[in-house]
Structures are given as C-alpha cells and as structure tokens.
Amino acid sequence: MKAFSTHRGIVAPLDNANVDTDQIIPKQFLKSIKRTGFGEALFFDWRYLPDGRPNPEFPPNRPEFKGASILVTRNNFGCGSSREHAVWAVMQYGFRVVIAPWRQQGDARVPAFADIFRNNCVQNGLLTVELSEAEVEEIFQMVGRFPGLEATVDLDEQRVVLHVQEEISFHFQIDPGVKEHLRRGLDAIGLTLQHEADIATFEKSHDVQMAR
View 1 (cartoon, rainbow, N blue to C red):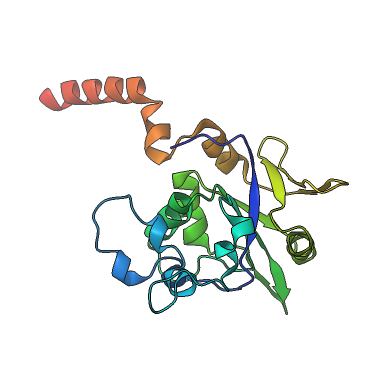
View 2: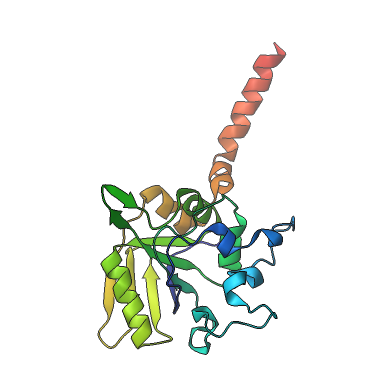
C-alpha cells in the first residue's frame, strides 16, 4: 500500500449525494478474481452512453478534469454493499483523495462516507476527507468558477488548500490511528508484520509448551 503524506492534483466534481457502491462499480464488473482493471468501470452507468461512448455531460469526462486525482462529492458516499472493489475502482481510476461533507438531518448526523467504505479506504491507502457542508459547497463553487482547479491535501497538517489567486484552506479531522496507517502505508497485515519477531517468539514458546 502506498504511503500518503501530501498530494496535489486537479479537483473533479461529482454533485451527487448517497452514491452507493453499485453506482461506483456496478455488479457485472465484480466477476474478476484479480484486484486490477476496475478503473475503466468506475461510475460506468453515468460515465458512458448506451452505445459505449463517454458521456460528455458527466463532469469527470470533461477535458478540464482530465487526470483529476481529487474527487469532491456529497454526503454518504460509498453507501450500499460492502464491496471493496468500489475502493479499488476509485483508486485505479487515479483518485488519491475523496472529499465529502457530513450534514445534520434533524437529530441525526449523516456522515460524509459510509462506515464500511471508509474502512476499506483506510486498508487500501485512499484518503477520505470529511468537511462541513458549507466548506464542501465552497469547493464546488470554486471548481465551477475555475475548471481544472488544483488543490493540495496535506495529511500531516490535515489541510486542504485550493490553489486560487488567494489560497483557500480547510482543516479536517482524522482519527490518529487512521492517519498513522496512511502516513506509513501500512494496512492491517503490514501493521501485524511489524511484530513478526514477537509473534515468532510467542509461537516458538507455545510449540514448546504444547510438546510437553
């Protein structure tokens, strides 16, 4: 898993809330047992016309967003099924960061990202940034005014910086454990292997005790 520290890239908009994993990667593309080749199917039903041509009305298909590596979207992104393929598709398309807002709905707090999707992102090195609705709305406004806008996401400083004439920045919160996962580029297996020597010592002593 690739470590994450600081990333600068073009911001592409996806102005949809409650984007579920079937919209991110439709079920017909889940047949492969490999973990590669999913980027072409990302947002398939929105990204392509029925005849297979790219849909020019789909924002990430527009020329000014070519090569975008930061996605800004709306709340509850990644809801639905737990398929890890959704994260693979987002990353294999080229996105390193997804930004979304939380929102208050009555007494309930609607999250920026579905829990399972967010956890899968951590295990694969995709940074999810949760901001307020007002902050995300400002990003959408800036992307609309300056198509091809670039931003820098600094994990150490926990900041998103929009590179307009007068830079605009937003601070985001992140769990310290998740931050460490991403900074060191270690998934759950990688973290476990850091204790390989201790595990080997335990197993050796355990085998001796079992032999008695």
